[in-house]
Image 1 (cartoon, helix red, strand yellow):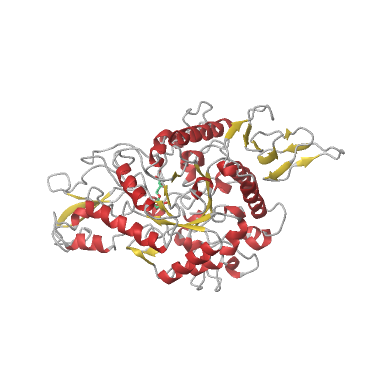
Image 2 (tube, helix red, strand yellow; image 1 turned 90 degrees about the vertical axis):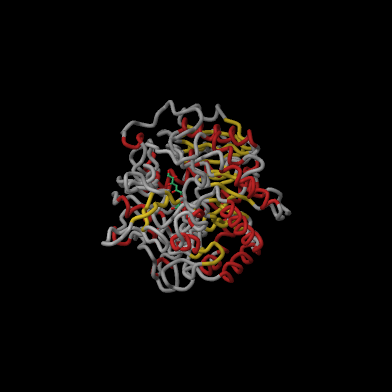
Length: 583
Ligand code: TEU
């Protein structure tokens, strides 16, 4: 291709199709809606988009429950709509990455339906993880694993061919159990089975032949489970949080040198050595195609040196750095995690892949506005406190400008370029996330970060689509964040992102190298680094940082203060990041 290994320094924008733009007026976003907004993305200046799943699906987990990997769900359009989106994106120089969900299928997938129809021990059942139960009558699940959405990771079905989930009805004969690390409608595939491997290679080829530029691989640290499926007493639930989540301790000043934050999943269901063989095979499939197609791992693995195994030269190309996402808004831990990421990735020759928000976590504009300065690990999935919206936005812009100034690739989540906060007041009866229904926790569930995008402040549904309908209600405050009230307005969040992306490209920051700058501020609460000819300085302290006279500010995440003298002195306020011309 004309841009070799384009992904190394790319800015990639996550589109969550059901909430980006609605083309047909049913209140749910769709592929034609995305196509109609490609000019917004071109103007913003991103290199690529990653599309969350749009495949045929009963939508029990918003499309992460795939019933047919080779077709578009009618909710989102048709395969022809996809081809049009791809062509229109490519015409604008925007690459397209699609989501691959290999850990599990939908229970409506033809394979799972065939597995239920077939007897125990059949080839159809062997594509999934069916097991006999424990206890005298198999009445206990095969092991003690819990689902990430809460509750047991096993569901029992009736005995023999034509099985259905056991309901406890009269005359039912209970039989085997099947494994699901997520919802019971998301049965885990058996990746030891060569048939499963072959099928997914064909799925990769189907989309590669269409011309996609890569895949985001869902739960890339799942798939292979430890031999014998041993019991495990650790916590995997995304909503109950980890032990550290329960305490009120402040951010640990002695945070581990390896940058770990508690974001990693461990246990016999995650990060098993066997997954790497799968990625080596996929790497070879992608390498048969031109244009440097890429694989990005969604792997909640720590420490960063362990995560780097996913991006060895013959495996994936990128892996989201969730340790960075979960780091508190505090200078010392940020410096530590940045250094640890770059170190671990340099060792394998891979770029670090930064991200601050996605469709699974509380938007960073709200997360960083929580009173507790040391982000509780479960604050990324759910929170019960009311975030300070002004403080949150200020910090979010500062955090984003810090991220975009780092070498490597960065992912943006739709709406963060508008500064959107989380919807923290969704009524329970409109929520759709299965993670919420299984736990009924206050503010648990991920719907609040999946609200339809406000395009026009004055239109019904803030211009999400032609009918004004939106599948989730938007907070009234979204009028302030609509794209049309920010476009062309100096200092708006949108224009700040746009300037940052243009400057990042002009200065080639994505392919630069980092050197820490010690002398700029002398404050322990400042993160300052040099990348090529730019100094990135984030002030996380409470006092303004005064810059040497004559310093040229290239981009600022918020207003900077200048005195009235002839040779004005710039002061960088609290919770602000600036990019400066290095001298
Ligand atoms: O997410 C995997 C997932 O749930 C992690 O974010 C999880 O929360 C973490 O490992 C807990 O520590 C992916 C998708 O992004 C998500 O939307 C899906 O619900 C999930 O897989 C199932 O496909």
